[in-house]
Length: 133
Image 1 (cartoon, one colour):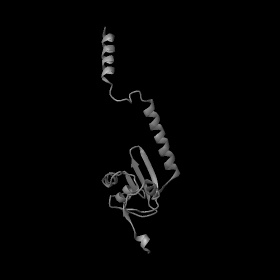
Image 2 (cartoon, one colour):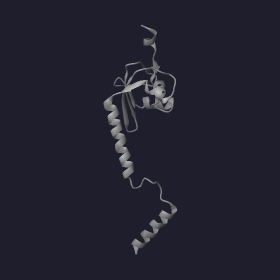
Image 3 (cartoon, rainbow, N blue to C red):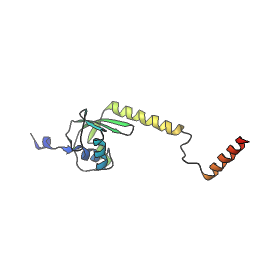
């Protein structure tokens, strides 16, 4: 075996370096919670990954099906992080469709503005009092 075949990285470090999670501890929590599978099996945060491993990563409503291409223990620029993995075309398509659906739902939500202002609350109270008469 060559030296490059012996190099492996913990999955929580790799997920952090590949910018799937903001911190390594969040990556470890996700792996521990079953949100990450390695080669279709549940993994622990100390699981060692190598190039060629298939990962399934669930983060909120999104699901990534990726293949590990390169390893890194350091977090670098996003452009370098994107070179650490390759995503399947189906995964990318499904993720983009999910994003589009969520975007349309937010746009169509009439209550997306948060709490009513003081003026709006007064108008609501005034309207309700007129309805009671």
